[in-house]
Length: 420
Image 1 (cartoon, one colour):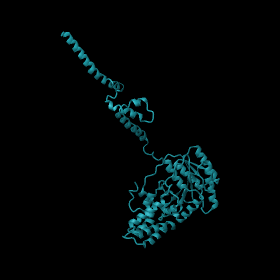
Image 2 (cartoon, rainbow, N blue to C red):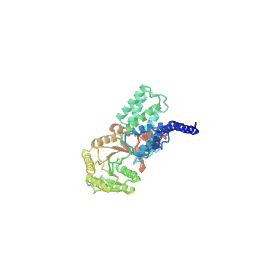
Image 3 (spheres, helix red, strand yellow):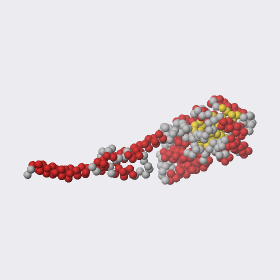
Image 4 (cartoon, helix red, strand yellow):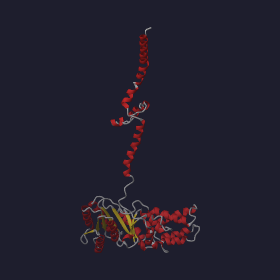
C-alpha cells in the first residue's frame, strides 16, 4: 500500500481522537470558568460561593449594594457580624455611669461630731448613762429594761419612742437574742438609725432658679444664725444668694441678718420697719427672680406656736410666696432649740399642723446632755432632720447624716469605718 495512505489514515485517527477526547475535556471545564469570572474576589472553590446568596438574602432591611457585594463568603459575613457590636459599644461608652451630683455632701466626720456631742457621750448624758449601766454585765437580765426606760425618758426620747424601743428589747430577751451587751447596743443603734432615716433628709436641694427656702420657728431657736451659716456654706459653692429680712417687727433681727450678709458677701433685702412681712417677701422673691439668684433664704418673725393669729400670719407669708413664684416656698424648715426637750416636740407638732414642713433644723445640740429629742421628733412627727447645730462656728452647722449621727451618739468604737 502507498505510504501516503498510511499517513492520511494516521492524521484522521489523531484528529478523531483529538475531537473525541481533547475537546470534550475543554467543554467540561468551560462551564466552571464562567462561574469563576464574575466572582473572582472569592478565589475559593465554588462550594463556598453557593451559600453566600442565601446569607445575603436573610437581612430584612435593605442593605447598601456595596455591602451585599462585600459579603461574598461566610468568612466575610462573620467579620461583619463581629464589627457591628463593636460600633454599638463605642456609642455607649461615653455615657457610662451617671454624671456627678450637682450638690456635694461633706465627708463623714464621726470624731468631729462626737466632739460636738460630748455632753451626750459624757457620764451624765444618754450614751454615758447607758454605757455605765451595761459596763461589767456579762449577761442581760429582764430587770435591766426598767433601768433603760428611765434613762431614755430622762434623755428626752419621749414616751412613745421609748415604749417602742423597750418592746423591741423585751422581745429580744424573750427569744434569747440579746444575750450580751453588744447585742443590745447593736439593737439600739439599728432602731435609732431606722427612726432617723427618713426620705428627704440631708441638705437643701436645688429646685430651680431661684430656690426659695423659708425658715420658721419661735424666737430664740437660732433662725437668723442658721440662715447666716447656710449662706456661708452656699457662698463657698459659688451660689448667688439673697437673704430676706422677713422679721420686720424686730430691728435687731434685721441688723443681725445684714451683718451676716456683709460677712458672707451677699445682698440682704429688708423692708421698712414694721412693714407687712408678706409684702416684703413678695418683693424680695420678684427681685431675686429678675436678678437670677440661685437661692433665697427668708428669715421670719418668731411665731409663738400657741398663738393662732400669729400662725395665720405666717400662713399668709407662705401663700404670698406662691403668688410671687410658682412652687415657692420650695423648702420650709422648722428651726428648733435642741435644749428645750419636750417643748421642741410640741413646737414641731403645732408648726407641722399649720404648715407644710419639709424638714427640721435642730440647733444647740452641743449644749445638752440628753440628745434624745432628735429621735422623738423624727419618730412622732415623721419629719426628716436636715441640719444640726453642734457649736458656734460656721462649720458647726452640719447637714444631717443619720448613720453618722447614730454612730457619733451611740457608737462604742472610734467610728473610723463609718466615717469613710
